[in-house]
Image (cartoon, rainbow, N blue to C red; front, side, top):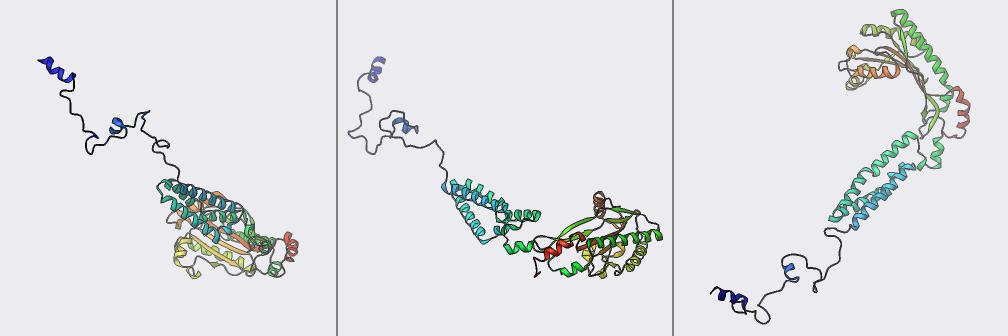
Amino acid sequence: MAENQRSKYVGGAEGAPPLPPPGGYHGARRAGGGLDAAAGLPPASGSGDVTYAPGGPAGKKPVNTIGLIAISVTALFVLVLLLMMGAGGTDALYGATLLVLQLIVVGVIVAAMLTPRGRMLGSIALALTLVFNVATVGAMGALRSAATHAYDGTKSDEQKHEQGYPGVKGTANSDVLNGMTLEEVQAKGDALMAEARERVTERFGYTWVEGGKVDISPERNGYGGESMLKRYTSTTWTTSEPVQDNSRKRAIIRVINEVVLEYGMWDLYALNSPESGISPDVLANLYGSAEVERQHTWEYYTDKFPEPLRFYVDAYDLSKDSTGQFRQQREAIQQQFGEPLEGVQLMIFAREVLSDADRAAYEEKLKEYPGF
């Protein structure tokens, strides 16, 4: 019985599913790649009815053209900016042409970032533009020009001629030639300070310490070049002993004022006083308080206009420093110039003075500037 049951499966067609009708069942479709394709697998090699589409590795996309354009245009624009800065064309960096070009570059970058495949290159180009643009490169060029005085890149011949002017714009050359020379300013200033020190020592017993060093530097001529006229700053002389009593400070100022008048100058004028016309907030910022009695710095000044010599008397008092910031400033100055932290200090300053050694060259140079 069992043998007969097995035979109907291994024998003829008895018991097998019926054959499909001619042409197949209605609506039935054969999978394009056989069983493998039906199962979602790639067709086996050698299938006669399968064609393969050409292409690269799976998932790799070609580089976006607009992205390449954006990064290339940005790199070229940045190179142009840097070359112009290096050539001294600081003024040209702010011209209308470069501003328009920068807007075009930004437009190309935005277009690249709006495309999915160009977004990465567009982002790189944008970052590059944020670092190197007309504003930043122009500022770098201006700083470089200021440091090196390299202003010739965009100047006309007339401007270059003006740049060599030996005087100072707005200052009459007759006043320079007829006024005090650098050597006269230095001699008178030294004598004035020496007499003031001697008088104060005689009256009050204070001793003095010299600090800093003489500084003689060229003035700017107002046309982008250096003048032959000089700016003079003397050394400073400061009492070795602190002066913290306000009544004593006023007594010392009166004695120094006697010397000033003997040298034909005007009375010492208190710059730190509310009567100077300076606003209270500025007084507090400069001198520690708007109230004179509480100020850590008293500053007096005199001159004899139109003479260039200016005389300054300062009184530094750390006992009036309520925040400690003024002490830090004085400590930094002491470390740099060797001045005492506090005390009464004398200094001479002058602007636009001509040295005797430069007088002949100055007069000769002026012949090239008859209308100045």
